[in-house]
Image (cartoon, rainbow, N blue to C red; front, top):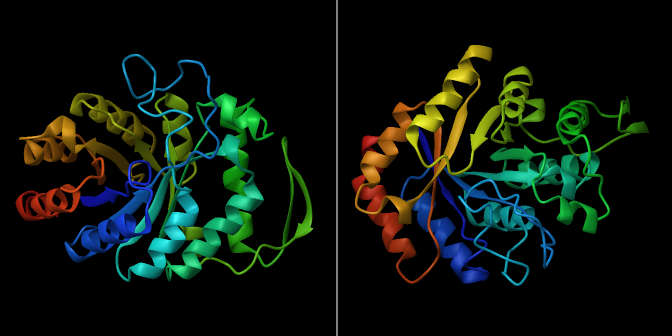
Length: 284
């Protein structure tokens, strides 16, 4: 199982903190570094957050949140081996051409180490504030995947679809990984499972909390694809005192990639070191 680290772009909005965390994770042998993405958080929004019991996130409009893609470009220049990825970009905050260009650029700057996660986006108020459509999110995601792979695989291309009609154009340079640049689909419904399986992508389950829940996603994914990868995140604070057991449970439930998360403070790098020493050798 691959084991990655979530970069604390929400709790540590400083150059020194991001550098320290990224360089420590690479030196300690972690597989990858990850961000997630929001651009403009509305002051008020509905209870649609899918990762807590009350459907409210632990952050708000005043929270300091570094831009996910810009941060990864910065981290690409500060590292050499570790893979870098975003899980996920809500598609209601961007458009396919901008996303294709950003992903290709980061892949170039990282020498082919980038992985792109995308999701429909649950915070529709954010999409509307940015002037992006928020309807038909599943169908838009599938069309976005088609456009991304055209952009990454052809010198120039055109596209005629349900939501986008693009004249002949080019997005260059191409990512070193080409159309093989790894895609991850974020979501918690059956449609996310289907899209991952049908579009040669992985399925990224953010904070599944219980291994039984992740195992059910694994069962559904394997029913549709024998090769699609499954990723999950693990909050270290919720598993304090049983990190190895919790990580093994996620691995045994079918996770191919586990991304550990910890709020940044003065002990954050020490905890990364402890995880790398006590847990990582038993997983990889």
